[in-house]
Amino acid sequence: MVNHCKAWMPDLTELQDPDSTVAILRQELANAHKELAQYREKLKEVLNENERLNRDLYKMSQCWWQIRVPSPLTDIYFNGCKVHYDADAYRKWESWCPVCKRPLDTTVFGSQGHGQPERPLDATRHHRYAYVTTLWGTGIKFSLAALVLGQALSNVSKHARVLLHTNTVPPTCLQVLSKLWELKLVDHIEPSEGLFSTGKTGSRFTGVFNKLHALNLVNFDKVLLLDIDLTVLGCPDPLFNLDAPAALWRGQGQDIPHGCKISGRCFFGGPKDDWQQTNGINAGVVLLEPNARNFAFCKEEVTSPMHPERIAGSGPEQDVLSRFFAAYWTHISVDYNFQIHHLWFALVNSVKHFTGTWETTSEEKRSELINNPCVQVVNQSDGPKEEDVRKVTRWTRVAYNQDAKPVYQQWDARKSVTDAGAASPETSTMTKAGLWVPPRISRKLNDIHIIHFSGEVKFWDLNMEANGLDNNVVDYFLRSTSYKEVRLWIDRQGDDESYAKFGIRCEDGNFNAIDEKLSSDSLEEIVHQGIDQIRGVCLIALQKWQTDLTIAMKTADVSSIAELKKILTDPNSNEDNKLKLGDRVVVQWWENNKNAWYPATVECITDDGFVRVHFDDQFGWNESCYFLKQFVEPLPNQ
Image 1: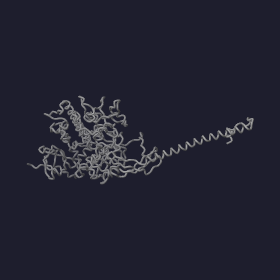
Image 2: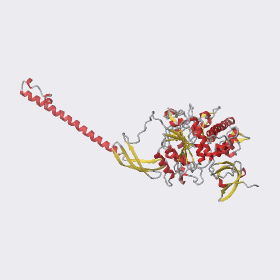
Image 3: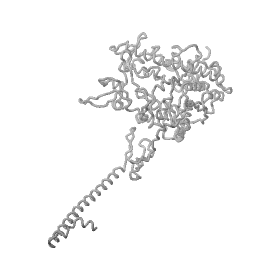
Image 4: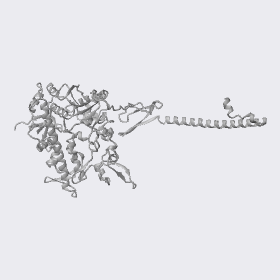
């Protein structure tokens, strides 16, 4: 205090007059009062600012008292009231699902974050990966297929191979399969009836939910779950580098790049779709990260008869997986799940694009597709014409030029795909004449790693001991799986109405566009390229499957398929083998509430109790259908 006073007090020894000293002291005191008043004004300003900031902070906290919970599937929404918060840590609301009306809790975390931290990748850690497939039932052909798949994988990868099987698989089969697979017994998962759109009784898909046991293989970091109807052409190991879960986005697989994230919001339909599932993944090749908790939750959803997640479908297990991981899927390229039957769809799209009969979509859907950054675009400097967008919807608008016209550019995969091993975009290409064809048609065969013969007839249903595989064998397989398509595009024996919806007609075995301005030669080029691709894919798949079968027989120490089947056959099996391929039969059919029998020819006999027959042409059906064996009887001798 003394030092402070000395700082402003004058030096009294220098003063000549006591009166002047008093005057100076009074002046200094006046200056001190003036400064004090200034400090009080500043303090008042600070206090006012503090009060204002407190009011603003209170207002900000009050404006987040409610959230709105809507859904793109309905116009209904709920407002949620905040029930608890902890400063900047989190805020929690209670609300309700606008679709199912069940309660929802929504928590927003602050800057400190309380969510699950992202697990850093440990480059020094050895990751355990495994290929997994599933087997159930007594059919020896499925065991044969599992043996061939195990052999194919052992040829190209050193990762573990795990076969999940139920106790219904005969010991004779397991003994042979143990030479190529690590066997793991699992309980049968009995799904709820509500998952089957056509009913569970007699369905060929009642055992597919046993695949879910792959989620419980917690000894592995990632597993690649495979169907057994696959031909492995190349090593699938790079798929383990993707983020799990990963699978082919069905229907969209040729339009987005390998490794791209999938928005599962489009999997769900609203009132216009009768609340059905409208999209999803294909479960033929699925990358999963095992997690016991997820397995328990998913199993509960499948087995519970009244679970709110329930949506009936025709491919129940892949639909369940699609919904369960809807927020997390990564796309796997068609190169790793090349489905043969989709080639027919690609051929039809090629023709319809050429003739201008590609179905138009709604303005809302077109806008959504055009602005979707995952929609592939064709490299054309002038951008797409309106009709091209309407037909193909493969362009993305990125900006507007000075004339307010949309500017388009080719999609750059490097901006969205973070995986270093991701492939380039699945660009559509042109024929030699510059005609557009989908990627499945233009794909080079040596770029395909896995072929999925996902039709009803499988390779193991064919006589694989026949000498040589040529187009006759390929056409027989295609005719067995896609009779209508073969009749239309290879035999060229469809009716006028069937061709008219594609904008073409068939005259004397030649295709011509209904629009006479379009070149018939160009149309024929598109069809021939499509048919050549279909036959080529089937041929290399059959040849590779036969090669793997031959090696598998050596592994099993047998010299023929007949000997291998004899080893696999359960001696206690009472399977009825009266029917064989080509037999003339009558099929029980209900029409107009009346039971009748119709003549047909056996095309395929499956191990799971089904017979595929082709009805006689005289009935005008030209259809092939599957029936349980009890509804098919040999045609009586006439």
